[in-house]
Amino acid sequence: MQMRLEEKDDYLKVEEMVRNAFWNIYRPGAYEHLIVHNLRNHESFINDLAYVIENDGEIIGHINYSYGSITYENGECEKAAVLGPIAIDKKHQNMGYGSKLIEFTLTAAEEKGMPYVFVIGDENYYSRFGFKSASRYQMYLEGTDASEECPFFMIKVFDESKLRKGIFKNPDVFDVGESDVDEFDRQFEHKEKLILEGQLGV
Image (cartoon, rainbow, N blue to C red; front, side, top):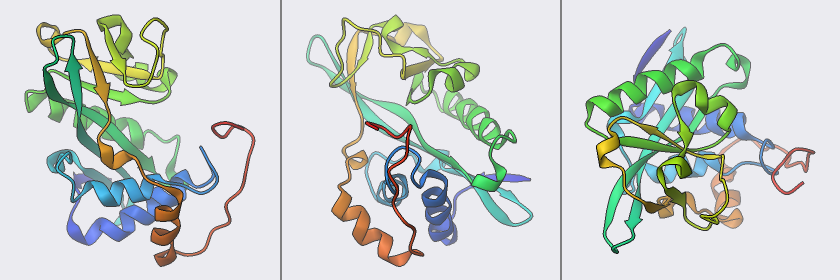
């Protein structure tokens, strides 16, 4: 196993792996591979935290970080890092590769001087890496009710002195439309979109 920074020659392989990993999981088809593609040329992209895991020369995992923004009560704004998308090849899931990527890159983020990192995901999974509900620190996700617990919006804190009450907004590059995904998918092998129990809204 080798963990290294993503290189330009990896791009298509990574996108295909991400597409396969997310296909029909949260929605019919997948959006995440287009987000990964668009991030690389976006100002929010943190390129020195984009890592892959290789096994016998095959890319089996990938992780991205990018900068969203926090707006504070006094109207000030500043950038803040968010983890994701992260994907592990379906044949290699539940083998610890995702954990290795997350632990390694969180250490790198702390070494870069980031005071904290956000993630939007499964609280049962990310809590094992020290992520806690962001509302505990009066940090809230844009579009959610600040008076209610939002367990899937979490934060890993490295420096509590930098915490202030605020609203976090994901990078705009995370917003992709179905027509854009359909057009992007033309370069990949055809896969059937299915509506399955457990998907968002199903």
